[in-house]
Image (cartoon, rainbow, N blue to C red):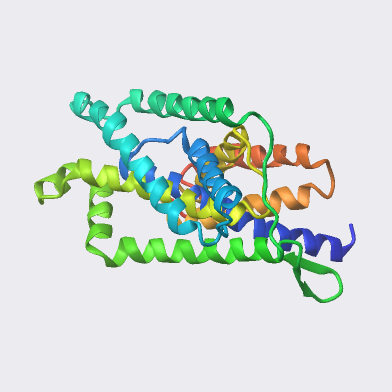
Length: 296
């Protein structure tokens, strides 16, 4: 393969991987605190894409401005799902040594309901928006062009990861979240309202998807079925980077993006996803904690 083509594929993979990592942050955060995989993660992303889409269609709100609406809306939706649906299962099964398995099935059911309600409301069609500068690109040298919207999504994804890491490390709420993740019983003895922390954490994980949805909608069409593909990639990204590790999400996303982008130069884009699953299986065999993960 030509070295230039390979280099372009790697750079495009890095840009795509940053987006994968940002999508996986919410999933990793929720698991790190609640020890539960949110199977509705892809469905929340789908809602996060539809919010800026309809704000643009109905009110011509720029998607980068609509993040001020989408992120709080997704936070409230996630907070409500956790407080109304998931929290009662924790209270009912709090005597269990492990987290209740019923929560896994519940989140899967919530995802199916969200997908099908959206399908009934809007149909199966793919929908997108067109911005004036969406077709423009930064030009690096003679061969490498990076679209403005994709580059912005990559940079904001890195910034979002850094801000979330600082929030968890430097704020009182962030320290309470980390304390609950380490030992929820000890956190409760210290006066931390564990259930409230769960609600806030789930809401934050969904709010991240509201931000990512606003970054994606200028170059990625949305449909009710889009959540499945990104949900699966989020699981792979979290495992690669390390379950519960926020920086690991970006690292895992970068690995996944580069692998898919380079593999697409040899096989079809659809077949390239096979290599992601191969890496996923290898990591599970040889390093189950991921690249930056710790034992939980």
